[in-house]
View 1 (tube, rainbow, N blue to C red):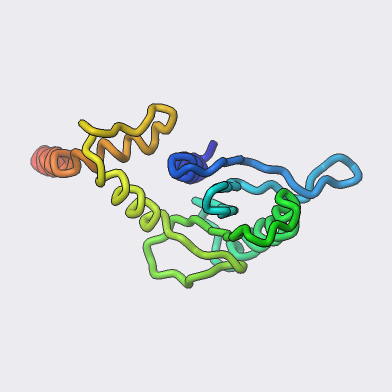
View 2 (view 1 turned 120 degrees about the horizontal axis):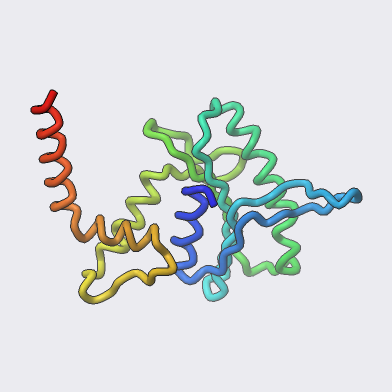
Length: 171
């Protein structure tokens, strides 16, 4: 599983969503499918359905938008069928991208989320509980790693600075 797909899967499972990855939709007459949806998550209590398309590619924004347009159109076309047109379900689509620059709020009709923003959300939530009181279960290794980094960030940064200084002194 690709890194961002794994991160999104773990994060939403951790929050109580039922998550399905690589969901093929739109069965064609020849047995192929129209499209695969990377992450689909449903929270039964909140009645919240999420369709997440992560992307670490280096495509231009025009090409990214074309790619996302196909994925999100398929999500809008097929995901409602899973719930029998249930009107009380809040449906949301997210494009999760790695970018440092300021981005528009949407792409291809979906909310655009930077990886750094998602990581900030995760860090804030995981920092709320000391490791001595709550450890992320081992079934979510990325989240557990982030919890340790959040708990020991001062030591990690200090260690990184020492390593950087030692590397600069050796040059």
